[in-house]
Image (cartoon, rainbow, N blue to C red; front, side, top):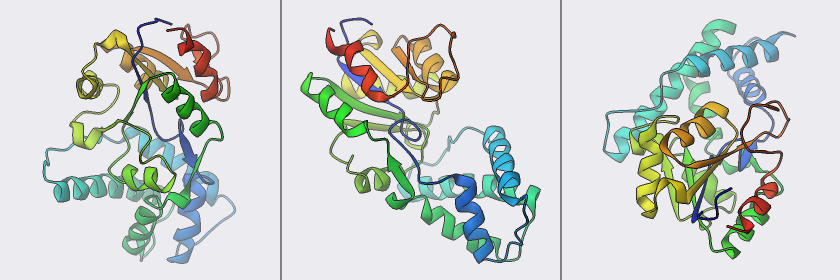
Length: 239
């Protein structure tokens, strides 16, 4: 790890915090409330359909520039994904009401949970003099989630795809984040859980990158990897 690091960037969801439960469990719970007919296979079917719908969705990049228009674009993007899920597993009459509910649920900080080492790691990096930023494809609900989880004042910058008009792994979103800190790429490190979006995306721009691989699924891929955020500290301590 280079000793020139001045800024550490992080992905957000599944890096700093995670869904409290699972997306499929939350979808199923609220869908039943609005008339979805549950079967023994529903949870597994929703999980599989969500993975496919999320993977097949276009990047969350929108032409809108006004805040209200951006939020509406984000909402429509998610509507298409969730509609795709239930088109596959079974549509129900009050789907629109259900979507309104779950869209709000994922803005509620109570639907998310910090990894236990997140805050101590961020504090330790601050003590080392690091600037901190987020680079995420999360939408603007991220700001409410961060405030509720106690991260609101922790980061110097937050760069999200809908405001940057680019989504990871595209170079533009990383360059936008770098510009906010006025640093060169080699002075920045990006940490995230996606080999493609976080590691490969950052490296293409010249940032250093570390893969957060909590389950050890990417052994032998030839990139620096950690199992928990606090393992990052020795890597940057002697910069």
